[in-house]
Image (spheres, rainbow, N blue to C red):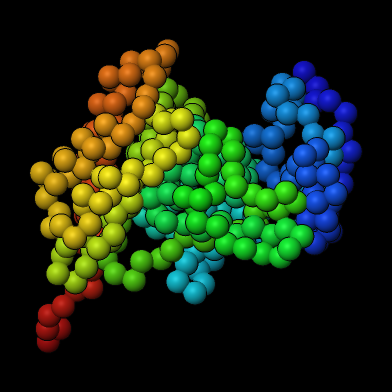
Length: 295
């Protein structure tokens, strides 16, 4: 099926894109990778009257470390993140799991984040790692905590006329690790179950920070705060991870469908959480500086 008729505008600057969006925010969409938007338009699930193409704004095509975080620009493709040495932990773990090579070569992390698809991989990872979304609109730029950005099914908290220009992922100063575990029916499919885990260790070996995010087994990407709070301040043990995994499984809300039963999916959440926390701990220990004599 072909999309409905629309006006096409190729933006020459971020300000031009924002101005075009602000003219009619209800009927205008930003086009970056287009891997979600174009199929929705062809199926007539979305029919904006104007597309503002930002693919000429090469200043937004970056993945780089700066000021204690990894900055991902609005035109950084999923494949750029796969290839980057600046990303680690859950983000590096998730990047190769996003769709298939064709989509990874064209789609963008920022576009996926803004789309807020409950089966998209990135938002649960960003919830676990404590990312921040940078939006630009008619009133300038502002930073939005990812927990405040995701507000519902395909729904974000952008104000009218705003577009996402960057996502910032904190870089822990101490030992840390993270994993994204994803179960899919076939390569490139959406997640049947996705669990993102992140751990940071204090100098005494206790857990200084923890993050857990869920994909596909909740109405929209969700941070499992109760399980995270169980972990922080505690010495990491198998029993502690098992308790956190049980709390995460209890917080999930999967539905029985062609991909599996509710009970089976909830069990996968439990297993993936325990595995993810154990792997994150191993990474954290491996990232600790070594000490001792070199003589």
